[in-house]
Length: 550
Image (cartoon, rainbow, N blue to C red; front, top):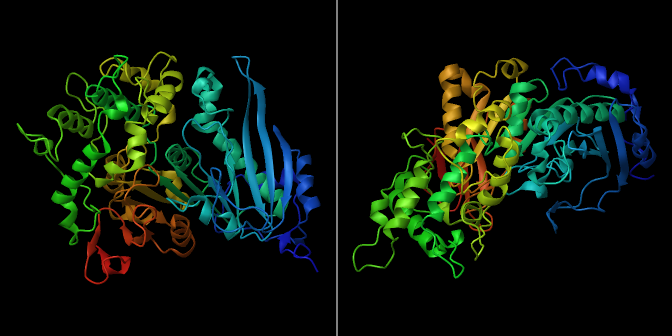
């Protein structure tokens, strides 16, 4: 008999019943009895195109036999072949915007035949506008290769209410609101309604994993829709992206542009402000000062409070060796201290000193690779567009990283920041009452959202809740890691397993085992719950077992 013939899947529930079941959108610990068993088939998958969910149109429902598709990171296949599942693609709330363009919230939902009664919302990032494959990506460098779908989760992704990754949607007011929160609400509710209709039950437990803009989405869910998820992993969360972090991106761009060499066209070349050798000089100095503080010189700086004096990096008269030009050192010092207005008021956080400054991700965000006067750093491309089209109120497409005024322009970001940002709520009252767990993860060499921001957030949570804080919110810092993954770091770690054990077994993570990938192969370390850090206690220097958290 075929593998499809028997599946322990409950029979379908009418859509109206599904919606009623989903009022809370997550397991409460007092679950209704499950319905009787139904058979999952390709025909049952195809029948989902006939949904009667209000405002929802299923555009495709495809059956994927086991072993016929592998997950992808971009165009690269990774991991093991996917299990048998149904892919559902659809549109929510199709409309014509005030700009005359069509809009909708696009989504993809994958429904495994061997369902674990769990659901995962895979966060997006950047300007969104793309429906990514709904594998249920894990955290850090594991990503798609160790996904939730392979563990029996139903998983969903969304384009967040607009189509295309450019920032032009920011000119349409409803699209701004959809991107901030409304599209995510609609996607979560719709996906769970389809899950209930397909399997006959809502998920027992629901989880969220996202980095960057996806991390912001996770924080937003914990605050605006606190009963939708039992566990949320917010990695490098963009908690202040609509104000502080974008201001910092402009500050960094202008500081570095100011020391960039001039090209043949008379324009400064941002990417050449610091050569790879220059950044290696900085990384080596950080390692010299702070690497051994954890008991072992291993290329990883565990102490987030490491400090250096950039005057020590300056080339002295007649010395052009391992050093920086004075103007480079001064620009780097100003960048690392964070942006300020002319009155000296801080507009964002400082940045930790970390040898991950040599990482490809750090350069991509801050410097780019363009050899012309037109910069291609992510700050100058992605963040410029977001600031001018979406974050500024009213929108001002002329506003960018190079002409941002630190006295005048921060005020232009406040109105949308009040809707979009997620840094203020440290009470999380409804999420706590729901029993939700929040796992924050942040790379110490992140070049767009400072790890100091996540440290500040968890410290405010602890100040608000005292010893109870560890019961629902924890932060893990990743030395060397750039934005979301990459850098000289142990950046592969099973966040999904950690949050699942915390939610379902009460096993609060004190440490999460992490492994090095491209830049640190064969190395493992524990990631420790903040403020503890990994300390060498003796043994094999490559292994996490040789370290303790204290």
